[in-house]
Image (cartoon, rainbow, N blue to C red):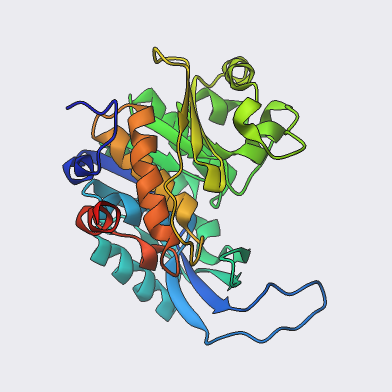
Length: 326
């Protein structure tokens, strides 16, 4: 299948197996006309409870697109656990490997303004109990996947152990360095095949100067790739928000590929980055190139920006095609 120039029809040909290890959170979401300043109180709309968590979002996005997705993580002993697992199952995610622990499930408190910008406060809850012992007990299920998705809302020692186990078994490891840390463990870098970061995170990680005018079109992307290779990573996707993304790939004929954005009237950007990551995971599991996967992700994340919430705003291939082919 030719994926060098991405048509929307290819979204309906996702397949392969994706393992996602990490966080599941209930998003307590309020909309306001504008975000409050420090110490200020503003009026908001009704409180909404929506399924979220970076890893849960990524798993849901990949499953809705047609990938066979296995979720690994932990939920608590509260009612939020059933809420989270029910929504993931409805998206098509296999949640049978998720651990149940005592205490609260993970949650976030999100405020979204009229311009679709947001602020997010994260409470780990049960996500802090995604232990090394737990993932080691699931090694067969994890290493049976085509690609592994990781972020940093789980204990770093667990993330590192997952990367090592899967990379050594021949599973491609895609790491979303978020919440961002510039001091990734050497062992985690060694066992990461593909890195996903935004432009500011990339500049900080590689000790590069971000453009003062926020114009990344003239940025020295080949230098960024050289810095990544020196770090030990040969493939990366750098997201640029409303300006699209850049694929850096030392394994491809074209080392730097600029991915154009898909324009929509944004309603809520919560979870858009996770839908992008989930699409890249599904694309890679389907045998697509990294650039083709990122092209698909541009459409999927744009669709997500046009609805409220994270998982609640994600679409199926048919829904996404209907929006952008109309």
